[in-house]
Amino acid sequence: MKQKLALLVLYYLRFFAKLQLHKNKKMQIIGITGSAGKSSTRDALYSVLQSKFKVKASFKANSESGIPLDILGLEMRSYSVFDWLRVLILAPIKVLSYWPNFDYYIVEMGIDSPLPPKNMSFLLSIIKPQTGILLNAGLNHGFAFDHLVKEKDPKIRRQRITQEIAKEKGKLILSLPKTSLALLNFDDKNVKALAKQTIAPIYSFGSQADCNCQLLDQEIILKNQQVKTRFIFQLKDLQVGEKHKLEIEINNFLLAKHYGYSLAVSILLGLRANLSLSEIKAALEKKLSLPKGRASAIQGKNHSTIIDSSYNASSMKDLIEMIGQIQNQQGRKLALLGDLRELGEQSPLVHQEIANLASKYFDQVFLVGQEMKRYALPILQKNLKNRVSHFDNSLEAGKQIATLLRKNDLILVKGSQNTIFLEEAVKIMMQEPAKARQLLCRQSTWWLNLKRQAATK
Image 1 (cartoon, rainbow, N blue to C red):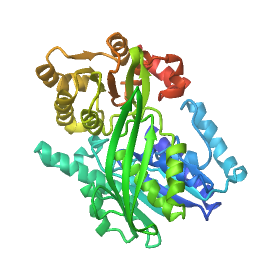
Image 2 (cartoon, rainbow, N blue to C red; image 1 turned 90 degrees about the horizontal axis):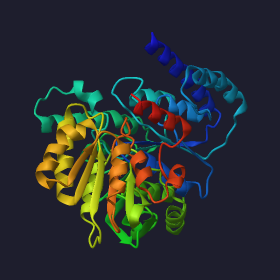
Image 3 (cartoon, rainbow, N blue to C red; image 1 turned 90 degrees about the vertical axis):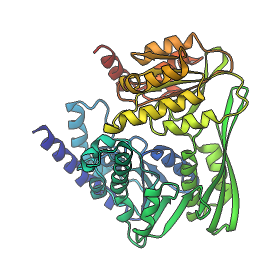
């Protein structure tokens, strides 16, 4: 009964969202999907396009309920029954009273399952982008795809599940008509394969030489607790000439390679919107503000530096490898790692891979979560001896680590949000906890109440 009622609510919201979209027929819709980097791509693209156009972006929505609410200009407050009744009453009122006029609508399209309403087909029944972006396909929410694969070998099974996830996300690209545009990450073989299947024109990005926007290099610069990431791109077969290099520097963030893909997308679509390279560069370097908890540099206690990537666990491997490659680090390299959730049967293998990487690159590792305890801790205890610790929750971890931080230490904080909430450890470790609401993710009253409730269970 509850499930049927939820579907009725979704159909109701979808109906009014489609009416709202019909009022702004000239608006170009840009859909972004992938297992990692959707929000960063949305923000990079927004920073570029809003410099010359009127742009709407789904800053707080990427799901079957969030997208229609965002289209209608509505936002949930508490997710209570009364809150849902409020938005259901307001939906038709918004259609009659809310008349925005945008040139572009940038929308995240996140899926959790191959089944409706949490799949791509349902999202495409709400909104039909003219431009589709597919960043990558990974094991996020892999548990929901387990039933589609019968293979028993763990490594082969992992490949097949990833292919199924790519297939579902790829429906965005395959839905595009000839008059649309597909942007594909050629570094991901499952994504690149769609280039032969879509009828839409393609812009490609990645580290390969055949890409329209090629990521040539990435450099992390650490100096006096200041962090910045430099990306160098080469553009070809575009209106900038046969080949052209572009350098982008992002301050106060230690960004993994996949953030280069987000920047590449914004460069390509900025050029398509007739912005110059200098305008694109200025917009990204001066206006780009990445979401909280995505590898931002925060001053820690005792003149240490925290790399706060506590929003989620996606691309944990990339961040670990990147920090491992940093040269001339004066202090220790530390890590606070939380569970990678919703991986299904792939959880043991993924956590073991993370443990082996962390053993290789970090001087000391701190863990939170039962998956880390079960699969990663034994490997780390073997490799790091007494330089690994496990904690029952983020608060305990933060209190202990705060007493251990030294000058010039660099500590990576990353893990899933589901009951882990590593940002609460960051709050304890940071030099100025009073800035938590300004700098950390999930600090609204609703989230803080949820965390307090979880802590009492």
